[in-house]
Length: 256
Ligand code: MF3
Ligand code: CO
Image (cartoon, rainbow, N blue to C red; front, side):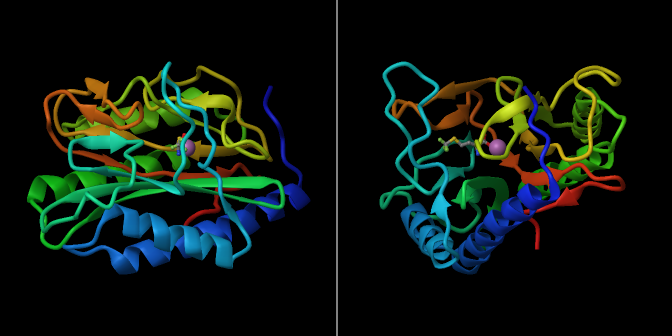
């Protein structure tokens, strides 16, 4: 079932998003060689709490049998890791790495969800391009996120743009509706056909999240039951925001 949000509910989601944006600013200020991914987790959690929000990822059930619920405030996926990487004191960022950071906040009963990929120091041209294409793919999707279009119009715009740039998209993971729950209907795939899927209506809140690969989009899950990485070991990037469908262009809640 797709939950349509009224103006008051959207305001509450914006409040949750304020805390998320503060956490992103805190993370961004700390990205440099020598920093651990656990440090990024800690500064993000502190910023969320300062804004009266809780980390929404804590307690999320593991999608794989045998895995435990997620225990951290953010996901940090380095280089060939694309999503759901677990922050660690043992993962020290070094010059040339790229790190996908994914985070969610929960405040007064409402959620927000976003992700970015950051370069550490000087990075290779292909990494620069991956980061740019992930971001631009999100915006290609957002351009289609208007009343009357369908979810497949968003998916198709993301797919068309990314493939034209010579990169591929994860098929097994997708964006989603969001609101009182982190994951609501509808699913928002990054691959799809125009004119298919649920129709977009004013008051729908969606997380659009292109997850892109330099090489083949074939992935595996590491022994920690969470981290998703490419089988060919090539680089990946990811970009996500929570948006709301309005009468005009979509409102992006998690972007400064
Ligand atoms: N942000 C992810 C998503 O967009 C969810 C992360 S799962 C978690 O769907 F367990 F790590 F929280
Ligand atoms: Co999401």
